Image 1: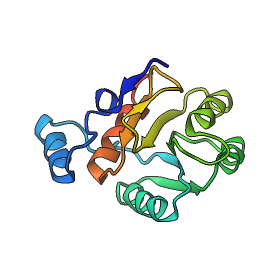
Image 2 (image 1 turned 135 degrees about the vertical axis):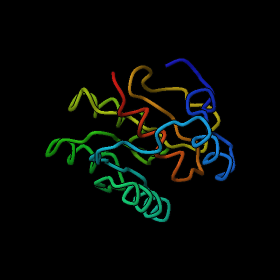
Image 3 (image 1 turned 180 degrees about the horizontal axis):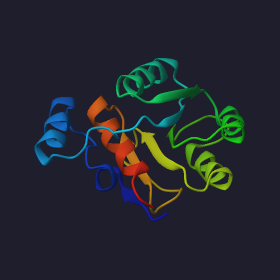
Image 4 (image 1 turned 30 degrees about the horizontal axis):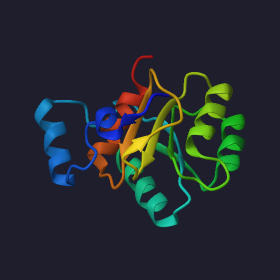
Length: 152
């Protein structure tokens, strides 16, 4: 993947939560998908994971939570997932490595990379991939899910 600024990919990096919510509403972009998605959330920080899972459930999605990459791969072997939302800086197996393996198991899976870094160097580029800058709010998360789950 070529080095791209997160703000180039997500459109909301660094925006205050109020600004992000306003900009999403102002352009009329969908805030969430009309049908519930099966979302696999992979985050090693328990507080961030709990907050993100609550946001996803509030948006109406079904959420499976895991802490590490190998646990996420086990879930992907057992059931269909629409979108993988993963931290980039996971211990042991990075989020980008997890995404590559997830696409081997489920080629059509949407990918959302959540990161606090300003650039994401290694990973996938292309259809159904988006980067979500940390910290993020519900509107930014919903927008990222829509982009990742959109047409390939």
